[in-house]
Image (cartoon, rainbow, N blue to C red; front, side, top):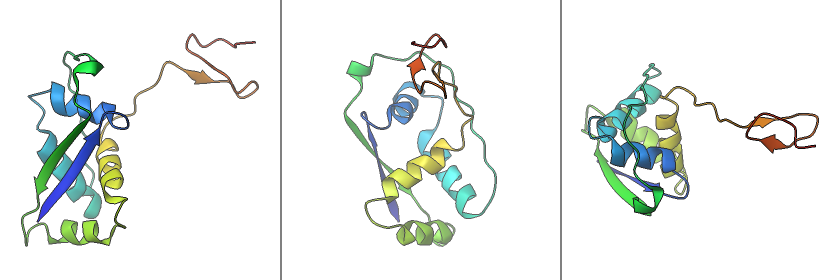
Length: 125
């Protein structure tokens, strides 16, 4: 079974950089491993590889990639994918993959008392 995943510049900039920038990181095999682990209730962790980032303007708007599921070895993954509502598969698969990476802390903080963001960590009032 061929599983198609689309990465969009508008929504998936993190994954698009990972796919385009790091030739040492085998994106498709790591995504397949993340799906296997998720379906089989196993744990898999990925590290964010280091590397130079090219300008966002040079990235394509959409990248389509295909992950091959080998039947019968990956029958459980194929069954899980088919059980996901159409129109939600792509997003769910990408979020399963994202969850294999450590969290990234943003330089922004939310102040509960003011509900305002400030990149220096100070109140805007």
